[in-house]
Length: 168
Ligand SMILES: Cc1cc2nc3c(=O)[nH]c(=O)nc-3n(C[C@H](O)[C@H](O)[C@H](O)COP(=O)(O)O)c2cc1C
Image (cartoon, rainbow, N blue to C red; front, side, top):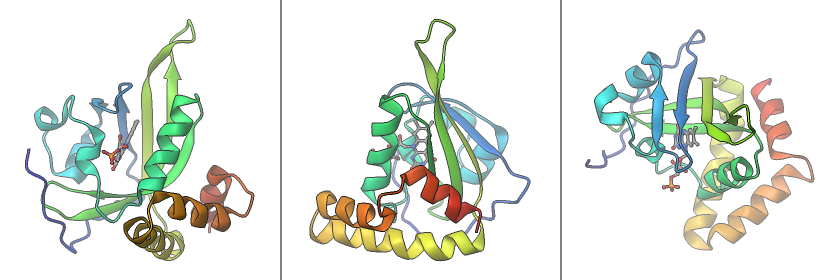
């Protein structure tokens, strides 16, 4: 499938929207709820077993997804702000809670992401931070971006900082 060209059109995520999807170990979409398809602009057929990275927006710093996968592989949950790109190249921001779901025997069943609208005040903090991280990734690489993120977190956990920003 062709990658869309990003444009400046924002798609509104409403305060009642809870955007859910489930992924296998590789991040491929196993299930998504109707609002997930509606926001993304893709049909269920187009997205079933497609990688979640189909929604990846080029404004997203790599370091956020690195953190996401490192934590999921360790069995941990992640809270993160994500800018997604629709089929038309438009964008929408969400605050995502991603966790591993386990079978009764403790093995991995899938990964589940539950997303909601991002507040205006959270966006005012996250947009400039992500812009800076992305610039560093382009000019100096992910290592420098990681160091900048660590400095920003100032010894606190990524999840706790993101939750605090979401509650602003
Ligand atoms: C349950 C789950 C949900 C995800 N949701 C998104 C998403 O909404 N948008 C996104 O860009 N990446 C999402 N990802 C991360 C992607 O798998 C991928 O790491 C990311 O898009 C970066 O793509 P890349 O690793 O090919 O650079 C999700 C991963 C999981 C496990």
